[in-house]
Length: 285
Image (cartoon, rainbow, N blue to C red):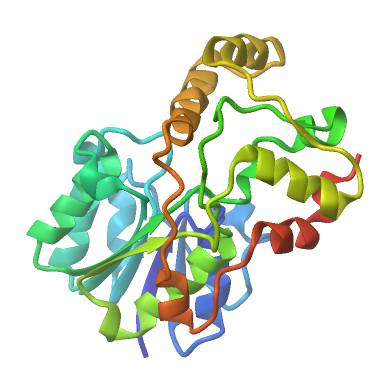
């Protein structure tokens, strides 16, 4: 039986990985900052253990007896050499063999991304690895943009006419589960995208059709986006990060579509229309 530690098990992808692995023969351990808070949201079959990249004293118990690690970088953690890569090295020293790392689409081409630095560290280690280079999560529509959709009937992002290959986090997680349990995926990288490259005009039309009411794409400029977002209560640092993220779409860098999901899972990835249909409750007025 494979012993697996999932980091970020309450996050957008990690929660689905934890549940998916719980349905396999794997023995699942979920590394969380607060065991008490995590009990309500994780399946009962997962072994909850205290784990924090910034607290090396938590690593020993978390890594003990583990064969494979599902690695998620905490979004706020940019100095990976201080915490992430030392944790990876500690895992290797105590017998972890394989790491599935949740990366981002295009990481291999951008040396400035912390994801790329983690990828290179894993490639230089004695561990086997699988990189899941995921496109923009559909779940961000309700995690980040829920209120503007429900209250204002709009998508307010500075993406211009650029396309994005939106992917459902559930599909990313399903690929993650397969790459943890099946050794055929070791030392490989997968670009995980949805089935289509869509503009935000397309996305607004899909939301309108599925929800049965008009959702418009506002298409603000970068300065207008930052000013308006901060006036609506978004912190300036987060507004600037969003502006950078959506600029990749604006410049046509986020629309690449691959068949990696179908090759791994034997089925196509979910469409945006399917996603919105599954989450209509989140987008009600």
